[in-house]
Length: 557
Image (tube, rainbow, N blue to C red):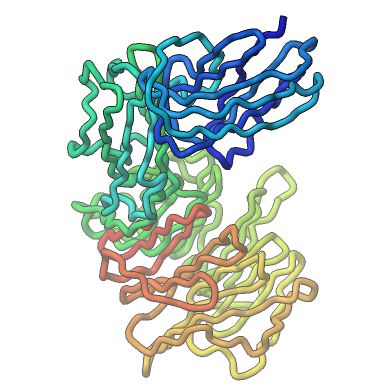
């Protein structure tokens, strides 16, 4: 006896899915089309043996065209007469002409099209069918006005709201079971009261729709998302996911209540390990060093810091910190409270550090000698050794212990691991006093900032391209990327690399103002502070921390 079995019903005329996919036996793909409006079931009738099969079960609204699979036992042969009818609410809405169908050989595939024409009348003889489409089983359709919010500044509410529409397309009422179960960045997404869906609804009638209105207020500058699952008493669920991106915003993190503290230096390893150092007095009763742990700034205990109340520079590693004073260098390992003095009786202020992960470190001072290297002493420790030949240095940056660059006034020096080199810079030489530098190892370039102490007080940002083989400048003389003839004396620079290969660089000044560049152009940043900003740090993830006088701290995140 030949028996007709129904397989998968696939919605949509453009569906690429073959409902016969995965069937080992004979399978015929039936495409059903026609202009008959919404249906909730199809009834397929065959003549040998006389049989009708209805799908889906339970009934669920859909529109034509659709595809479904007609599968046959392996011993099926001969022609079969097939009629397809479209039903809505147990009433025949459309009917095809009777067509002769020959089942394909086992493992083969064929397709036949049935076109439904509108009819009147009905037939309530409903029989069971196999329905495997999960969307039709659920009976609930979830539609969103958008999937993602526009990029929105951190802490600000997006002007865009997303509407989620739930429609019960089953043939019976549904009841919500408890509250939604959201997961993800819950603090950044909110369910607005203007929505019409009430989780307390006891009867979500067939054909009824309601809405959820979702707003977005990013609490972080990152890609954020939320997934919401709605549960119903019949065990079915509905899930939707929304996303959005928070963009960085400048915040004022001034240490209110802290007096007589002027920050002059800042450095860190990432956004949760940043140190700021400066100058205070004994009468102030505050530490000259503060640490940011990712959420707040805290006074950093300075036991054994030898009553040094002025921190002129800092360098922070993963588990160590160097602090420079007017005439000494202190070292902290393990991020504890105790400090060790590693160098004393220096001839000038420590103006900057460079160090690597192996604790090889270098420092410059504005005295004579002006350059010092921290080198192994042969007994398991390190000593700071002065390197003759240079004096009155003010800036240092580098990429390794054999690639360290220094400036004194407008003079340029390089340490190659064995000795000091003085690459010649062709005239016109750099103008003004070089105050700070940052080395870009990807582009092999040194960026330096300078300002004139008289006249127009012009500030400049120089780029010096370095030949990786010789270590000498290749753009000689170096050109100023930016010239600012005003009272903003730029004195600090730091940056990072973007995944695109561009650099993300910031410059700070002693009379306020932050410059920013992501490639070839520079622009002025609008920050919530107006005082001097002589120190700036850019974390690898992009957070920016300028520090200044009056315990000023700004933070871009």
